[in-house]
Image (tube, rainbow, N blue to C red; front, side, top):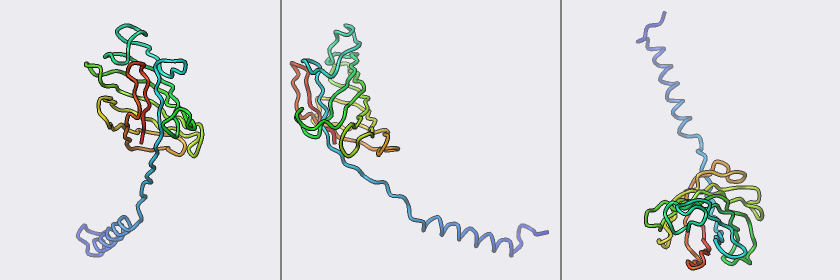
Length: 174
């Protein structure tokens, strides 16, 4: 029977440990791929082509997105360029909640569903704060499907165009 201090068993344990560490540190590691997308979300609360509607708030469905507590549901066109005439490559579907007491900040949760182009059939799940008084704001990319399965990361949102009086905006997401 071997004792714990047996030189032969300790030698084999040492060789095994060194071999295991060598293999663990020399196997090539999987490097994540980085994808940089730029697209535009057309968020229209008024007009014949409205793509967002208030569903709840202090004044019920008549609430304004500029008031704390208002919830909007969106199905916004996503295009390659900043104009609505640009090729539509998907839809941004989800909701905004005005979650800042002074009315100047939203919490957004939506899916970008790609319906055309290189990423057709894939989705990105986005959430985060949209403090629209800031020129540039970050949001989290928390998941995805298709080509974006298991994705994680962040994006930067810039207001490309805003018409506060008519509640129409074009957002550039990178």
